[in-house]
Image (tube, helix red, strand yellow):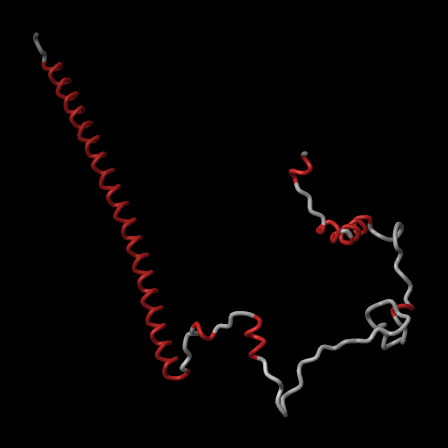
Length: 177
């Protein structure tokens, strides 16, 4: 085999290109490995910062609790409830009540309006301060049809029947049998 100088030169350039390509691939793999390490290190830094924030918050909370405890001991003297302070039921609660002594305030009473005789409503008639007319003297709104919205009527019917619907219990298995 006789090699000419042009042939040797082309084989030399090809071998240089192959070596350069192999070095580029190796360098690319090394750069990607370093990038991966940098990314992992950044994630660890973020985790450490979160831990630092958590520990700072924990430290501040515990120091505030100590300060609050010292303030409570010094100023107020509050203590946590003990088991003997709780009552077992309604009877023990009722036993705590005592007969009002002399000079005790009157118990709280709720207002109760007597229903006038002959009236069916549970509320007293409201009287207009301007005209003196009662609500019974006002004209009634149209019941159905012309002036009312059909959707509003359906909602009113549904609202009136809700007690019946809630009181009814349907068992799915019984319907299938």
